[in-house]
Image 1 (cartoon, rainbow, N blue to C red):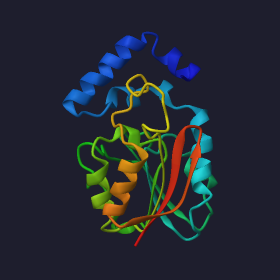
Image 2 (cartoon, one colour):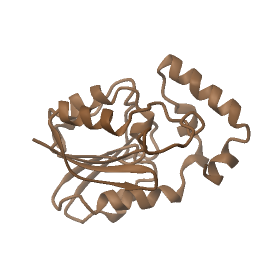
Image 3 (tube, rainbow, N blue to C red):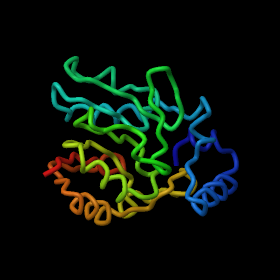
Length: 194
């Protein structure tokens, strides 16, 4: 378990109870994401890895953009829109993927990036149903329950999909896996809509 997370939550049992309560109500953890101390630079490497597979001239929307490090590493021909559960800066759009994945008009984009976000989404099937209407490319990460053995409640994760369950959702909505690899107990996927 990461040292920064242990420092953030001094009482792991209480944190697990809090996340269990959120899960029971199918609510997002807006309290957590509203705090300034939850953004960590060790997440940046994952985002940079995903960015290396985004085509020039793409129109990108990043959900769970956090500090928007992705913008700084994308090719200059790429347009970029950060989205998060809270308005971190003026140019951010706000969307709670557990309340209304349609809150963002996706007709302006061809690429959606999820770096360390889908673990906090209950219904990934519904989300990919919506993505399949407009999006052609999706780079994403997910700590699948059969790969990553970390305590999901302690980490604040709200969903528990295995690799096969997640891949079945991709297939159901005509997203083909063009590349996949494991990085630090997480699956990194690169999907194209067929």
